[in-house]
Length: 216
Image 1 (spheres, helix red, strand yellow):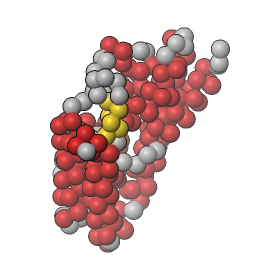
Image 2 (image 1 turned 90 degrees about the vertical axis):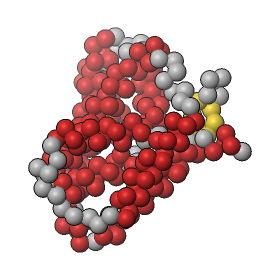
Image 3 (image 1 turned 45 degrees about the horizontal axis):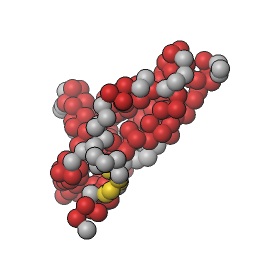
Image 4 (image 1 turned 60 degrees about the vertical axis):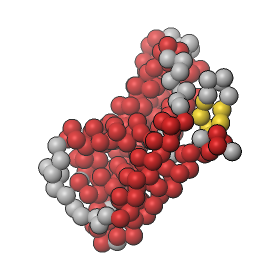
């Protein structure tokens, strides 16, 4: 049996590894930080950490087994999510960046907007799968061990998003001087939305196929 410190550090490492891949949600969070300030970025980051931690809790306590169809989404849901993210990126690409006061939007609006992007983004559910790869084998550990791992997971994810937000906040001036950065973020979000259509998803038989393969 490992020490609580080991379990905590293990959770921190897993939390950072899961958070590192920078998909549409991360790019949008960086954009929100640049336009609305660090407070908006922190709120968006906390929303991401909350969702990932809830998913990690469900997996490490075996609660995901109560929702066997959680990952069996119909093709139209996958396509709709990709379209929403694509047009969000297109709107960013066509807009002109401008600084906003941090009081321009209340905190709950930043939080809710981030949640909408998280749950409409198809790659979110692949992130849940990645969390499962790391944590499902720990679901048989003693309760104190699992709790320490979860605490570490939340700390690790928070560390990563805080670092990313600090970087984005430090580049606010450059962001507004160079419109190309703004357009690059929009373009990358559009590309990632299209790429998500090629990601493997589940169907009822347990096999995996990409949304595109369904129409071959």
